[in-house]
Amino acid sequence: MSELDSFLNSDFMAPMAALGVAAAVTYFWRGLGVAVSGKMDKDSAVFRWVTCVAYALLAGLIARMILLPIGPLAELGLGQRAGATIISLAVFFLTRKNLLAGVTAGATALVLMAKLGPL
Amino acid sequence: MHDTPDDFGSRQAAYIKGAKDALTIPALILGSTYMGFGALVSETGLQVWHALISTAVNWAVPGQIATMELYAINASLFVIAAAVALINCRLMPMTIVLMPFIRNKTTPKIVYYFMSNFIAVTGWAAAMKQCPKLPEEQRLPYFTGFVVPLWSVCMFATYIGYHLPGLLPVEVTMGLVFLNPVYFMLVFLADFTQPGRPTALILGAILGPLTFLFTPNWSLLITGLIAGTIAFLISECKLRKAQS
Image (cartoon, rainbow over all chains, first blue to last red):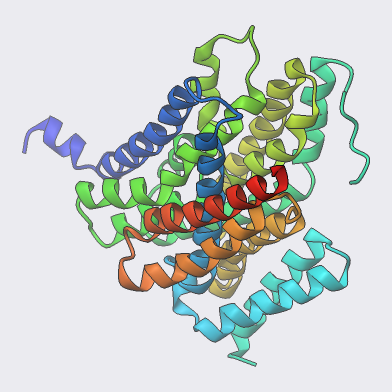
């Protein structure tokens, strides 16, 4: 193996390709958004449509992250994640929409359920 | 939070107000999430630099987690690129929607191309709420003042979190990662009253997990287009009725 090869396959460089493509495709969307926005009228129907799409995408992503996550949360059962979410919502509305209280309650409930098993 | 001023007085004051708004609950919650992310990266056996580079140039939690998960299972670069592109496609409509509210006539375009790197849910939601009420020249300063300190906190938290596994039980890492979607959910619920948004949010929340069961990769794109278009058509009908 040449020196270049061993550098490219080193523990540091090998993941860099993955990080690089991830950053490139991510920036593509952001940069494209800036470029397109220059040509779009804020009061047009197209703009209102894009706004609806943006909110739908965000809600879809958030619901998916809670109910069907990838990553470490996937090891937990759906019941545990849904239970923690319901506790979070209940505390949020009971405390007159206190964000910190709602989020803390949900995360604490999740940690406890993960440790002790489902309620 | 009812009587937010519509004018902070100066650009400097807008930067400071942005930083103040960011360095409370948003920094606490996003910081905790990024500790979880740092811990996750260290569990996959990568170096702390990889975690930091990811937060530096790919700042948006879901895409970062997907990148690390896919790398850990030896997915090809093409698979990683496609998956992250589909998860992060929301950033384009988000950027388009935010731009008119942070743009001003004097700032050169290159600044926006740079600042768009900092568009992610937390800063976006804050700017969407505050910036339309501000004088034009204070909007970009508010957004910048909000996201740059928030991003710095995330970098620091990534570093700390990387060194936590072993100290932290795995359940706590799960709790930290769980903070993020729950926080986002509550942020949008708190802002539910804006016309047109509830329909898009509710339809999106239903379609997102449903489509994910059938086609995990295309789920978000399909959700955004279908739920967004239906919500748009409904709100246009209402608008027309209100006008006639």
